[in-house]
Length: 312
Image 1 (cartoon, helix red, strand yellow):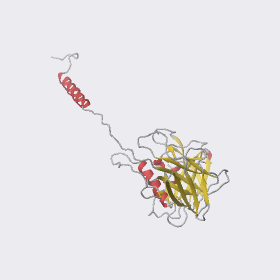
Image 2 (cartoon, rainbow, N blue to C red):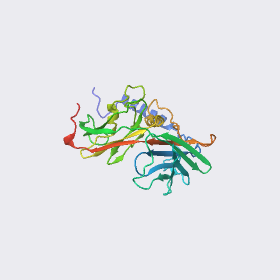
Image 3 (cartoon, rainbow, N blue to C red):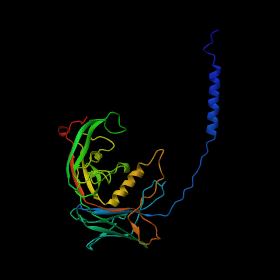
Image 4 (cartoon, helix red, strand yellow):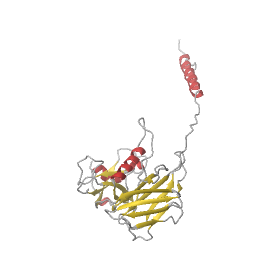
């Protein structure tokens, strides 16, 4: 005898009932757990970079905040900030705007740092004194900026599917141990939106041990100007090649590694060691970095008529 289509299948009803009961049991077992996290003492955060470029130089000082605090950083006000070079000349940085940004230089022709010189930072804030030092290393000239048109084999999350990959050409100095920070320049301004996209080089490669001394920078580093999306025709793009110390190289590498830290094998994040030291070994430690850079820069506008052919 044929079963009517209007009569439910008893077996299927049993399975549905079982799934419903499991859902009720599982959802009823959910508990909200509030984790109590301890907030440590506020620490001085230093974002101090000086270069050999003409123009005002800025050292930013702020206070650290809780990990779950998404508000803006609280500026450090009223500090005395100076930089002294290895010949004893003192440069005073003033927070004239009252926003924690301490500035030296008033005109676009003022130049502070020189290649081959060493610089010492001193910060006096209330009863605490902090110091740091860095040396301005040499930087090679950027020879050229080139680009090629490319079509992506997939739909990107953002940006065009068809556009231009940009790369720069420069040659590392002969002599092992030169380190660099490569920054893309878009519409005349250096741009590093994500820590995971920080591009650094040891000689002309990713790290020490590679036979890259004195060579042209390897392809992945040259193309690190193109990060999350392709460039469009008419875009103004370029590169800033910054010389950095080996200490700064390691600092930036750790920032990039922590930014990419995730997934199944993620490890707890931790504060990265700063080169800013409290004169009182028992006093609160500082965060951030004081660094120096010589800068080599080159820009271009993408012209489809001058693009290299797709390498594929």
